[in-house]
Structures are given as C-alpha cells and as structure tokens.
Length: 370
Ligand code: NAD
Image (cartoon, rainbow, N blue to C red; front, side, top):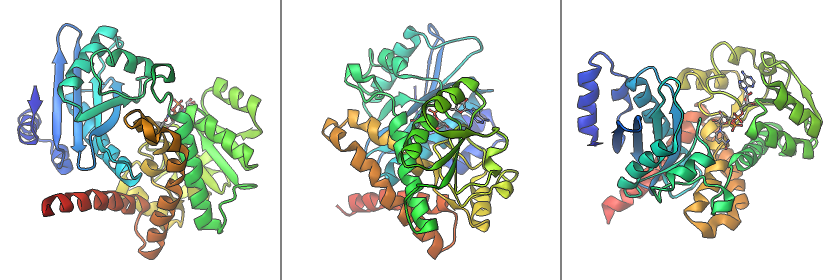
C-alpha cells in the first residue's frame, strides 16, 4: 500500500487527532507502510528528498510503543539522512525504514525476504542498509528479494562493516575542530575522551593512539573496555564522569541525546565531535547551549558521514578506491561550518542543515530552470 503525503497526513489526522507532531515535520516526498500477515512484518519507509539521487538510509528493528512512535522515528531519521548525504557531497537523497518489532520476535529470513520484496516495489527510489538492530547478515537475506540494498559483506561484493570508515570521518572532523580551536590539527598530546568503545569508538581510539593523543575511554561493557585497554594506551574513566572530565575534545560514540541541559553545563572540553546519532536531546535548545558555552560542535550527521560515504560505493563501484579521500573532504566541510558559526553566531547544527538544504535547493532551482 502506498500512501502519499496527503493521504498519509489524513491517516495520521484520523488516527491521532490530538497529535500535531507529525505535521511540524512536513516535507517528506513519500511515506510507505508495508504489512504482511504471514510473517508478521510491519514496516514503514520514509523518503524525505530524492533531488540529489535515490534515498539511502538504514533499516531499524525496534519495539516501538505504537505506530505513531515508529512513524515519528521514520520521519525524523529520513530527514537526517537527507542532510547527511547532501552535506557530505553525495549524490543521494535520504530515507529510513523501520520494522516494528513485536515482543519476543526476531528477524526471520522469511520476514526479511518479504521486506526486500516490498523495497523492490519502490523501484530503487529507496535503498535499504543496516542500522540499529540490523546487520550485514540481515541485508544478505533482504538481497534475496531486492537489488536495492547495501551494507553487504565484502565476501559478497559489498562494502562491509562501515564502522572503521565512520571512525575515520570522526577523526578527520576532530582534526578540523582542533584546527579551529587550537590553530593546528595535530592531535598529539590532546586530551580526548571517547564515550562508548563499541565498533566506532574502538577504531577511533586506535587512530588517536597512533597520533599519540591522550585518550580517555568510558563504556558500560567491561568486555569492550578490556578489548581497548589490551590493544592501545588509554585510560578508563567511569561512564558517568567522562563528559565532565577535563578534555580538549569529547566524543560521544554511544547513545543519542547525551548532550542536554543537564550535561552541557558540566562539559569541560573545547570541542565535541562524535559518532552517535542525534547527540543533542533538543536540537534548538542544546545547540544554543553549546554555543553559549563557547564549545565548538561538529554536527553529528557531518562527523559520522564516513560510514555512508563508504557504503554508497556499492552503488558506484568506481568510487571505491577514493573512499579515503572522500572522507578526508569532510575536513574542509567541517571548517566551513565552523567558520560560519564564528561569523554569524548560530548553532553549528543549524548552519550545517542550511548548507545541506542549500545544496538540494540549488539542484531543485536548476531543474525548474531547465
Ligand atoms: P556499538 O553498539 O558497537 O557501540 C556502542 C557502545 O556504547 C557499546 O560498547 C556500548 O556498551 C556503549 N554504551 C552504551 N551505553 C553507554 C553509556 N551510557 N556510556 C558509555 N558507553 C555506553 O555501536 P557503534 O556502531 O560503535 O555506533 C556508535 C554510535 O555511532 C551509535 O550511536 C550509532 O548509531 C552511531 N553511528 C554508527 C555508525 C557505524 O558505522 N557503526 C555510523 C553512523 C552512526
């Protein structure tokens, strides 16, 4: 079943007459709802904008409270993906998909094949990829019924786990923030705290240790901490203390919403640059709070674009050899954002979004002018 923006809006309106949250996020090109009784699949795909190219974005598998919460997530995340692709200079639009998890269920092959068949129906308008609770192995099952999937294992011609590339992008963004704050992008001797030593945090720690930064790490998982302390010289700090530790750069690499009106006043760093998605609990309020505190912030969707830059090479294999250089281009983009923050003091997130929108709009204008 395809739902246009208009029918989608009336669907929401009739089901949730007192909730106007969705309407404030208008502008999506298409929202599609899929369900299949046999496998229990219930999925929503949101396509925010395809001006620059087909929409790319991950598939989440999550136990939402209700459909409304799932819809909200799809609408919010697909918009974020659009900005990420646009600001990173990629010729792709932004989309996102969720499969609504029911208590005690897992992603079976049958369900993933069915999801793939639905994605195939979109004709390449949306290209699916791994995200929260979905893996390369899940993409392999999805690929049995659609061509429009990326994030496959290298052994199957895919681009593999993006985490290393994401970490490299965060590292490059950190260098740009250091250039802005300290006048040099050399991270040797800089005190850098990484909150969350998972796939991205671990690779980031390796890069920073190679450059002889002084690295502090925090995680709630002892196994993850052991893995990193076994392989490089880092100091472990309790997870609840790292954000207020005296640092040059703080890197949130675990969960979203950790920068908020409780944590920001306690930050003791010059810059925040990390991989976690949606780091600001409240974009407007917390972007301004960081600005007021004089803390340089590289927006999350820019700092963590390295993984996407790598993943889309599955769609343009000739770009595969230039992934590293493409990620390194994030340096100039970050400097551009940070310079604009200095020249017209507004939150970095807001400026980066405007730059992404301006790129999309310039193509839209050219299309109109044809
Ligand atoms: P991951 O699950 O491998 O690692 C997350 C780590 O955070 C885990 O080790 C976990 O134990 C730890 N953690 C959870 N709660 C914590 C807390 N309160 N304090 C400290 N540590 C905590 O995930 P990842 O792939 O490394 O991704 C990290 C973040 O970056 C996520 O927000 C993810 O959405 C985002 N991101 C990842 C990629 C990628 O390529 N993997 C790309 C873009 C964005």
